[in-house]
Amino acid sequence: MNIFEKLDLKWQEMHNTDCPLDSKQLTFNSLLSSEDAKKLCEFNYSGNRDLNNQNYRRFVRSMNLSRWDLTPEPLVFTKYDGSWVLINGNHRLNAQIETGKQIAYAVSIVRELEIFKILDQGKARSIHEILNIEKQVSGPIAYLFRSATFVRDPSHEDVHKVINTKVGNLLIEIEQEIKPPKSARSPWKSPSFRAAYVMAIELGLIEHEKARELYNVICHSNIKKWPDVFVSMHKQIMEKTIGIETGGRTLDNTNFMRGMYAFANSDWEGDHMSVHQSFRKKLKEMVPNYMKKYTLEEERMVS
Image (cartoon, rainbow, N blue to C red; front, side, top):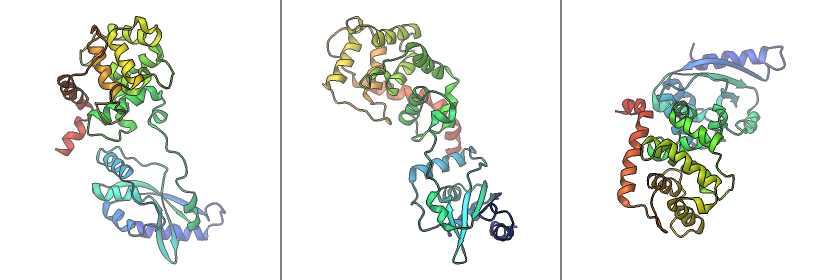
């Protein structure tokens, strides 16, 4: 029985049932081919949102990596003027067409087209909510994926790969033991600076204990006790005497790049720190190289 035969059968059941709830909506599971998806997309409702490239690419990636699974969130169809209409699921089906894969879906049919108006109104859950961890732990990991790999929209599966490694442990250490200041302007609490702390340790630019001691000092001691390099960095950022890069998709992010330089050169003395191009170039090789192990599976698939 093909998907259209199943839809017609359920449509008849919905109209013949004595159950008042089933007379409004029925749901079943179905394994669809990419050809099925292509045919179903021809019935996309004109009121559906245009394809959002970020969502679309995220779905394609998840399907290609076999992370896509049957969920209770259905494709939704109804009949309008005697023809089937797809009112929810356009992004998923278009993504499936690109992958050419078979995908299992829950499929719902509803009696009224008006239900379209209240679909997809909820707020999507964030990575830290899905993984049940602090966003201060997931955020720096997501930043490293965005800035140091080709993964521009990391998923909870990507972040989960890293949580139980030393990187995850170091980020938990920051949040639960070092406890950076909550001040909105403090660079020490930013995801990119936390990522700098972790990477400086993991890349061997500074010993863990020394880095931890420094982080504690700049978070909880008077600025007079800070090493010169952190005083200079803080002053440059607070007074904006340098160009500030806040982008979350670049290793040139000011808090990250200067944070890495500060941890790597904690004994530096002076009034004005300057991150040399040679250091930037070296870092832009080392960090992506380190992060590569978390994307190897996908790189093999592409190659």
